[in-house]
Image 1 (cartoon, chains in turn brown, cyan):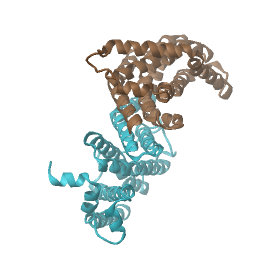
Image 2: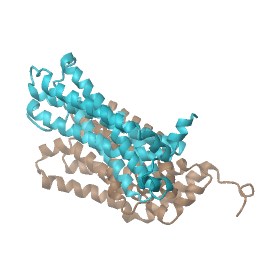
Image 3: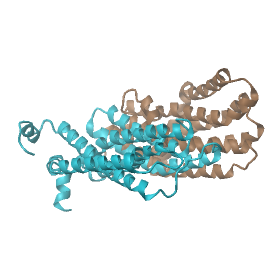
Image 4: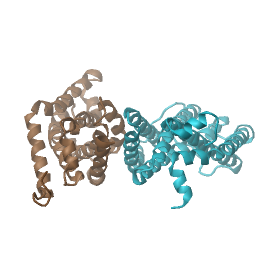
Length: 234
Length: 247
């Protein structure tokens, strides 16, 4: 085993970038998996008019909340996979053992998770807006609130994913423990869209979403790193 | 660190230390709860608007008080366990979780029963009711996570991390639900809570709250003792205790 003074440890910034590139590459090689939450997102959008009403005036009333709830569920479904593959093949163990701070490695993984789920969900949301007859005034706010909100959801979801990664069939448990923590994001996200539809400036709500994101950025990498250590070593 | 702190840290020390407390707590909670119940249900005057149905307050408010306080008991116990690696505090945390969940459920159910005669409906999406429901979900998450782990020590640590994350979120959840409610406030239902209760109604409530606190402490200690016996079932002192010795 090489001593640490002969082989210089990878600089922290480079390690962050290396993990970012690796995870992005992995995600693009499994494009099918990446598409699943998006397909879910659109399919549930089809269920709503079938289950409630195809009448566009009523759909317009429900649209902000429904799109947001579905984005939340899609993000929740994808959170399970955040650490699972790395846990199974031992990569996670190496990350924990590596000299780089674990919270930074976790931050890289969460960033990639947002880039491959939250961002596509955000970009896809106008399509759902059209399907559910969201009034035109709401689209800008929908994009902005989902961009900020899904990032916060990824941050929060990572804690749950880290806590349940070592549990067999932890997916349902993950939703159980994470969903109460998602609620503030949902409240401010959905009402930002609603306010824009009503012709009121949603800037205040978007600012709160940004604050929630900043707070979760501060808290989540450390909590997630601690949770991963518990999951791996008890 | 004082000696009693170290004794508290060892499960056996805690078991021995709490044994003499139990009868006192039991008697205190029994007396307080009986006095508060009889006073509140029998002698406090009926409310001018709500009549006798307001007496549900004597169950509802103490349980809601302790439901919230219980979450902090659980989270602080978890934090102590994570920081000082105390086995005992994880046991306290495990004991506090179902207790807090039960109290949250009691406050939700008693609130619903109170809502029917007062507002004409069992359930409204009021800010405080919704916050209590979310608190109930937070408790359920901690309990479910605890039971999902087969290794007791890892279960304690994982549940402690979750409880701490929940603690950081409780004020945010509460504020956001409050804000959400003011946005959607339904016009017909107003929460009729008198800002200042008459002393003759308020005094039994204080007695009930004190009684609930004593009962909470008693049940928490009993739950923790049961957990200690379960975890230490292979040890010498538990075997001796089972044969009729004293801890």
